[in-house]
Image (cartoon, rainbow, N blue to C red; front, side, top):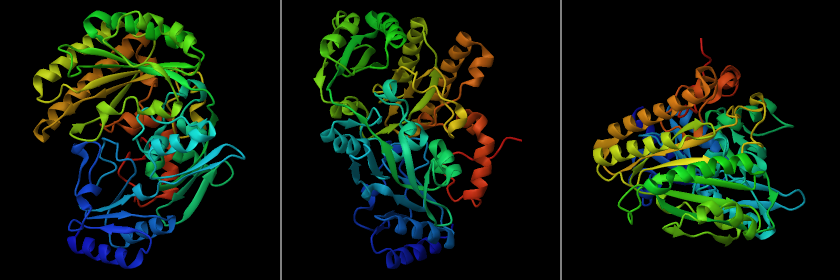
Length: 470
């Protein structure tokens, strides 16, 4: 990529895009534009474009091809794989397209591609509606949706991607199209799971759900040495007995106010307080060091875990599936792995392992229905190291990979190799970009065919290579 091409492209974009902001490294606001959730993912784009219309996105894509300048697309900037950043090329930043409109005639929301989940939650709440959003509300709508999307309402309604009714896409040839069950059905199939590989998602139409009642939720913190076994056994039973109204995320970390690793439980019940307190009684009786549980409006729910995972410093997210019941002894061994990281890498004590305990009844759909193929009765562990220095990047990534392998090994021990090998990985937690066969499974050959149809030049190449296995 020649520097002269980048300079020429910037000039053309500035003269052509009337409804967009175009920044280069010498522009005011450029430094803010390349900030990412993880500092490790910050790359110096040659040009940053903030479009405000689908037409400007189309023009930017076509001009990037004309000037042979590669591009990347970002929304919430939460990813830790590097797919939403680019060194020297064109960055299309959807951050100025954050409108949400609610249609009460059918309880749908049209959500622009630059929105974060906070935008959706706050737009839906006044109408007593809700959407299956991310458990961190500053996560981008586009990235989470295109890759699947678990949330607190998964037990009630399934995945975020299951509630997509239409997507407006800008394709590699500049066309602006709608993909839905009625239009461009093959593209609609592909973008629901692999959308990052097919174009720019301008907006989504989501089916919302009534959420008239408040929820009971909050966090309880316990010393891991004293409470871990009880908490894991409780969580196993919770998923086995809930009808989808209750859920929990268990974090293993070392808070600054404790001298040892802790179990941080974020608990949720979509129902009355007395009912919730009875369900979560075994945890309440453990005398948590901190207890923030209370009745609150649903609109607050997706902000509960924001604090420890805000922007700043270096971090990544690597997910691995696991099946229930989870063995407390194995989780104890992972506490030891976390302590090894603390000893090895300075500034890593904020690192966390998050175990999701969601009821999967509504997730169990045929894998052929859409590109997203992770449809089994299993949950996710998110390995989340935090660190400070770039010189530790390789060490931390190696630790994350070895820890992921250990959890994979436990999956195989519990279920047998054949079953374990059939369980894929969740792309939204894949900071290490595994083989796409692990993400898309048996859907990969069809995705490879559709990639040739919609993006034969591989313009959208920052994520998985969609090539059928030989």
